[in-house]
Image (tube, rainbow, N blue to C red):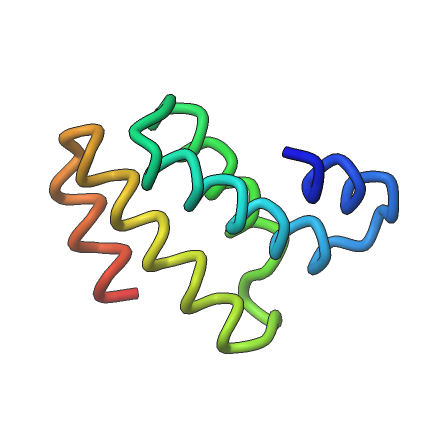
Length: 83
């Protein structure tokens, strides 16, 4: 959460996207609020696609697939993995 807060202060979209992935991945791994993690990753996806670095886009899609899976959105999870 601290990384995301700092990134938002920077105003740089790719920095915000990277911090969003860190926060959302932690939330999913800790068994937290999957809906919040999913929304955070959706925002990161809007910020980083289509021209962001490939590593960042890949990280977003993998984390989004995990969050979608835990929310029971299996079609979205598969789509993220195929993306």
